[in-house]
Length: 343
Image 1 (tube, one colour):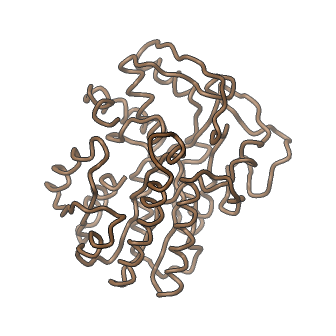
Image 2: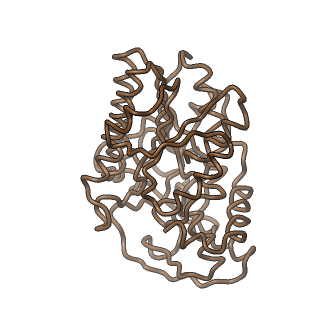
């Protein structure tokens, strides 16, 4: 996300200078370095968890916090520790907020749909329509859910996962810092973000992972919900998020809510089964296995309603779902080693 946002901002505002930092521990992270440097981005090797690293960064007018261990399974999957995800996602936000306090910088947090409470989401009345879960017509819905998706005032009560909790705590801290120190703060709860160059992992980039795996005829499986692949997510291109961020940085004092959903919504939502059909049409047939066993943090349908962002910022997604998938597919065709690089 950071590299995608940097490229877009430089292309759309000649008055912006971008500085980035990364600890480069994630597989494939180095691939972004050369391209960003050619575009004039000054990159630092720094770890968001380390106070001394953050204090060594130059002054900036805005911080876009795109740093996170973004897996809902983080801390419980046996691959990462619970302490690590809290240090990355929550302590990292604290370090950045202290930086913003020092330099009087604005702060834009990229949050997540996973701050919303899992039990009521898992209990939503569902039916299957066109190989995808859909809200049951006439079903009794909890507050803040409609056919347009989940709104910002939906419950955030635990459990939401360790990942969701770190982001929810980061949101609250950011808003408190904004009030306490008179800093402009924007909280953007993002749906699934996807586009060319996204690393392909099942837990942190499902669209890229699925398309790359299908093209290479790698093993794929539908997990949970009877092994049907009917679970649904909405999809948003980073360019659409970048456009909103630029508007927020240009108008830091706008008298609107500081928190909004930013997602593709029902118009850009699809199930894994539907994604498989798309891949089959483009790449040919491939077998997907079924594993019916349920997992603790899985939900059948997660589509966010971004009406608040539309009202407050006249914002709508501009990159359609098919264009996002096509972009990922073209990148996958041009980079046959992408799965090895990014996992």
